[in-house]
Image (cartoon, rainbow, N blue to C red; front, side, top):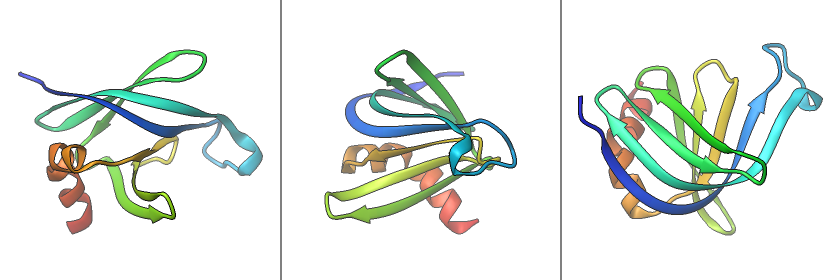
Length: 111
């Protein structure tokens, strides 16, 4: 199965939650990240990120991912969350990234 890859340079925040019954203080890892690559294939995509302490590869599956577009004073962002709420990424979005992930974004909006 072939992957399509988009090289990018986006700022974001990655959050990894400690438990299912999480409270604000249970957030184990909330760190600024640089999303440097997005790879997609039929059925899902992977965000490749660098945080201050480690490199991360988070995989999101079609149908098991919640994607929302948001807006702040600084512009538009994309909220990509694993369905179980265990981890998510808020990242800046460009037209190029939106177009690259469009099938996943639209799939979530329709669902």
